[in-house]
Image (tube, helix red, strand yellow):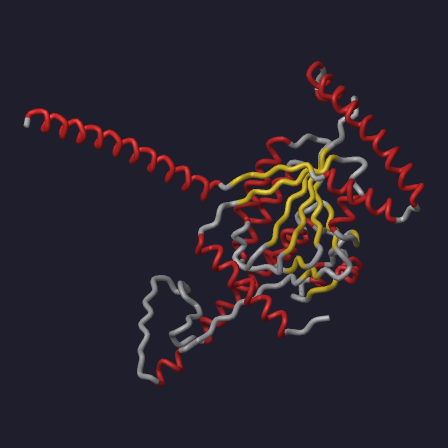
Length: 351
């Protein structure tokens, strides 16, 4: 029986070691998973070739067969020459400083960011990561463009998003905001931080105003003999409530707070768009870009694709995006919101 007890002890020790190793591995994997959810992944991609391909396809589609063959032949020669020059530039970069590298023919970069904002502007976290990454490597000759889409949302969320974009402005980095569909309210607050605003003809911009609406169930609760106790410390800790009985004094204070927020919004736009008649445009109205250009809210009429294409010959186009790994609950809620918005737009007015 002695050998049996020794064998059992050996198995127990082996099992203990294996379990310990597996526990450590599981812990490491779980920590890495947590970090990946929080940190996400930064994607930096040279998209110049994609736009070059679009340009070449359009040109070739307008040529006859002989012209297309000759163009393809010339294009191959040009690509070969550019590849040779790029190799030469890399060699010179290893020997020379930045200024001589620029003289060797290296193109400045146009960094392309995208922001598609929701009501709470939670996408600002991804934007913060992207801006930090660009600021870490950008050079004086480079530029930045952000493709901006947002109907606005909560003040503090879009205030932070605008502050993130101001990091380019305060460092004197040429920065353009391009709007293809909508940049209204908080979205326009973000856009006006740019040195230049470009928008598609039917893009919606403006809506420089503040809105708040709160349902009140007090009468319904009273009807069913339900009392609500609301205790506060501070005269204006709560001005309007959903369940208590609102007062004229509370309504007046709430309105005052909206006016103060509107004033801050107007001052912000006026600071970064000094040519705008702020009293004329800060009525809460929105305009199509073709109309907004006359009011100084937009500088140029163009789509984001055309704007980027116009820099193709002079700049290297670099797309920068931060992709945060989302939880299952976030993905489900995002899909639900999208489906609701799609249903509302389908039922609403449109062209």
